[in-house]
Length: 339
Image 1 (cartoon, rainbow, N blue to C red):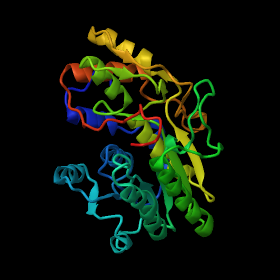
Image 2: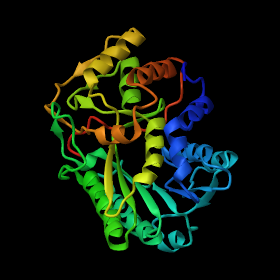
Image 3: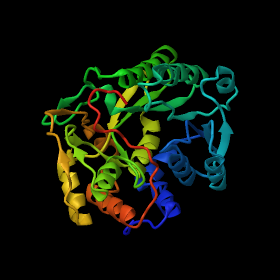
């Protein structure tokens, strides 16, 4: 897109536009696609993207509790079948329709400190329910770069073969989620891809949105977590769907993010220039950060469609025109894993 979207409708259209690579890969995907946990930050545009990439003869089914009726109705308007389901309820999961292709997006992150029990239920019990129900399907399971330990900022980032060893209860529950799906892959031959994403960017949320909002509002920016990786949400969604063709038994893993090592300090300064504001920087950069090396995904899928510079420009333009925010900070500054 050559200019900043002027409203949510234009933005969601951009986020759900299939890439050329996705259209090509979907030719080898047969049968329906079911998206579990489809009402989160990324689910609605992913469901719309796969709907746009598949022929009408293949159903796209979005599953969620759908506490927001408007989100459910909007998906249906775009040709996506919706089903209300509590994935913690094993009977409801058992009643879900068969589908040879599963995108698993359910999980719980924020509020871990207050409800660690719920975090473990969502990130460990739900995968067991889904793994049992869809053990005969192909599954792409959304995971996170937080399953890795913090690494030296000059290391190039964690790679898929690194030993997992994250700090904090949330990240460890994400390791549990991976282990449970890996169990079904090994025991039942279920093709599984562990999709380790780090961090997706939408103009309404994400690391760029968080930093830009603080600069614009003249709030201090803590640079202790001094470096991050980011990727446009549309590219992340496209790569997740393309990963259906790369699911394996035993389970495969793939890091998905941008190529660049992004300095939070330099990001703040860049937004300061665009806004005509002098950013207030606090703290000092640590030698380590949560960083992923996504070379494997670039080898498989090629370059991203939206560059870091384009994301920065669009984020600045969105905020300057009063664009909406989801009000869901990433808490990327967190170093102890307590979200």
